[in-house]
Amino acid sequence: MTTRNADQKTAGEVFSETNDKLRMEAKEWMCENAKNCSVVAVLIAIVAFTSAYTIPGGPDKSGHPVLHHEPMFLLFTLADAISLSASLTAVIIFLNIVTSPFRFKDFASSLLKNNLQHLSC
Image (cartoon, rainbow, N blue to C red; front, side, top):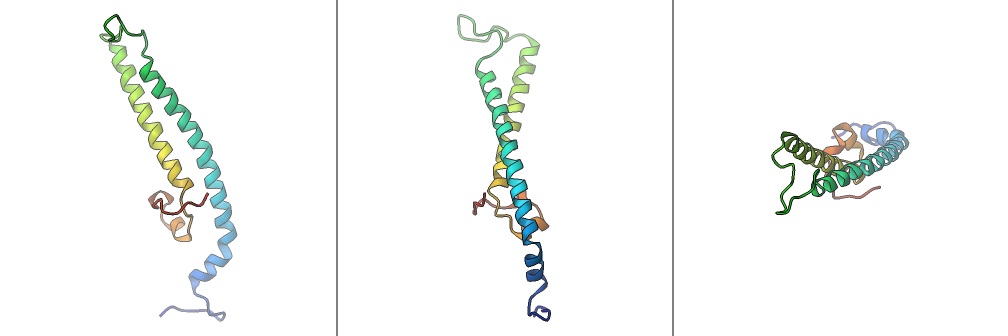
């Protein structure tokens, strides 16, 4: 049995009614920021992907990288793989935020824990 006020509303219903405008403003702010950040993350992913295929020094006659035996080439390869992985992970996280349903119970825990069942932006 839930406790109701004089208007026969539960605490959750009163909270939803009084804070609905604030939730909508937070939704718009989160969606706009997530969209802007995802554009930046996609641009970083494009650069990392492109640099993986246009290796420094170019290929030799057999098709292998010219700088293959240089220690900095290994560092470049590792840094490129890490940047590509990190930027693609960021894109996934930002898309999760954009597609979040932004329910009141979501703000109590975390928006990143939501499933992608509802599209709201």
